[in-house]
Each structure stands twice: as C-alpha cells, then as structure tokens.
Image 1 (tube, helix red, strand yellow):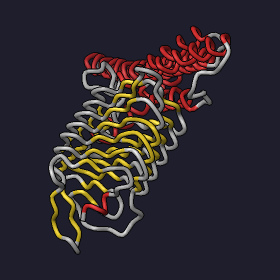
Image 2 (cartoon, rainbow, N blue to C red):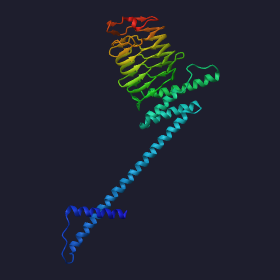
Image 3 (cartoon, rainbow, N blue to C red):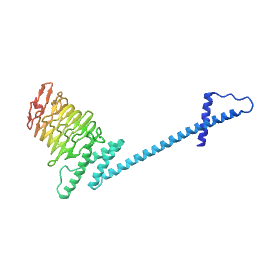
Image 4 (cartoon, helix red, strand yellow):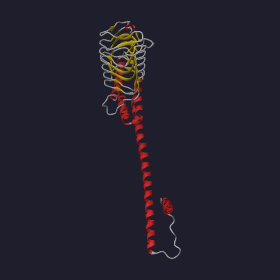
Length: 356
C-alpha cells in the first residue's frame, strides 16, 4: 500500500511538473523559512491527494469484489432452489410433486434470467406419459386420480400467470404442451401475447362434467398457437367469447372425433386461424354467434373473409358444424362474396366448399 502511495505521489508530482512547467532553480544560497514552509505544504497536499485517490481505488475494488461475491451467492441460491424444486417434481409422493410445482412457479417469478427454463420444466412435466382414461382396478384408479390432481395444479399455475393482473406475468413466454393430455383445464381470461404455444398432438378428453376452457382468451398479435394434429376426442372444450385479434392459430389436421367444441360469440378480428385438413368425424363444433370481421379463417378450399386458396379442404364426415347467426362470409375468385345464411346448420358429410 505504501509503495502504491509513493508511486502515485511520484506520478502526481510528475504531472504537475509537466503542467506547470519546471520551476526555476535557485542559483545559490540557503532556502528561506517561507520557502521551506511552502514546500512542506505542497508535499503534504500531494501526499494527501494521493492517499485519497488510493483510498478511492481500494474502496471501489472492495465494493466490486463484494458485489461479485453477492451475485455468485445469489445465483447459487437460485440454482439450489431449482435443483430442489426439480427433485420434488420427480418425487414418488403426489404431495411432494405438487409442492415441487409451486416451488418451481415461485422460482420462475423471482428468477427473471431463467424464467423460461422454469416454465419449460413445468410444461415438460405435463408432457410426461399420462393415461387419458381412468384405468381399471381400485389402486390404479387411485394413483391415476392423484397424478391427475398434480397435473391440474401445474395447469392452474401456468394459466394464472397468463392472465392480466398476475403479480408476475408469463405472457410472451413459450409454452410447449406437445403430446400432453388435457382432461380438465381452465385457461379462462388468459392472454397469449407472444411466444410459441404448442398443443401439437395434444389430446383433449373430458370425463363427465370435466371441461377444457379457453373462454375469453385473447390470441393477440405476436402469438403463434399450434393445435396442429391435436385430438378433441371427448368432453367439452370451449372457446366461448374468445378473441382472435392477431397472431396465428392453427388447427391444421386436428381431429374432432367426439368432443363438443364451442366457439360461441367468438370474435375473429385479425390474424389467421386455420383448419386446413381438419377432420370432423363426430361430436359438435359450434360457432353460434361468432363474428368474422377481419381475421383470415381458413377451412381449406374456402376461407372465411379471405381469398380462395387451393389447399386440402377440411373434411366433415360425421357430427355437426354449427355456424348459426355467424357473421361469416365465403369469398373466392369464382363465386365472389357469399354470405353464409343465418342459422345455417351443416349436416354430417357437408364441407365448407359446399356453401359455394
């Protein structure tokens, strides 16, 4: 430290020497008391200034090292929490797995840098194999119900963070539900405002009064939501009063094989919604009261409120598609603008292309 101070003093003196110019050296004779006193004051000032500079440097260095150490401890604490939550999610006991889901969600709220990683873990849990139908056997059924409760908890945590007003919003994050089984879920009021939301190959099946609810959900600009190859095979799936205000939502090659899927009073105002190659073989798809005012809703050979495009048509080989009271149109270069009659109910075997 003393060596550093001495070097700094020499440096300051050299700078002053260069800036002020070399002072004239006395030719001869002893120094006067006043000159000695002035010299001492200058030397003390230089030493004091140098000491202050050194103190500042040392203080900054100490603060920097402290901050680095605190950051490392902070990150280590988050990493430890992540490991503990992941371990709980993999526990044998359903209660431990449920606690792990809450712990992972809290960590995602607090750890902005790795929020997406925490969300990926929760979605990954839902992608793990799960029987869509309850098994036979008392013990197997009990285990199935316990696991179902854990999965419902994970879905509730995710959905809660997609609604406006959430303490920490996960809107805009990616959600990968590829191949997941949904037999009861409530996304009511969620907003998909960005990121990729994957329901590819997901299975939607309800039991009794169980439902998968997307009521009042908004698919906004910047979001990409894929229901591609999803299977709606039972129960009640609702998109009532949902708003398609931008982004891209696809049900391409989805299979509606037994569920009732409602788009009642939905508003298709912007973006693109695609049903290309979708198969309707049973159940009911209900667009009662929905309005197509700006979105490109594509059912294959015919678009609703868009231009004709030669792509595989949606197939309606059974069940019913209800467009009652929909403000919908069919447009193509061949037939021009055609209004779908109010109260139209398409019988089994009817395709959108037959409207022309």
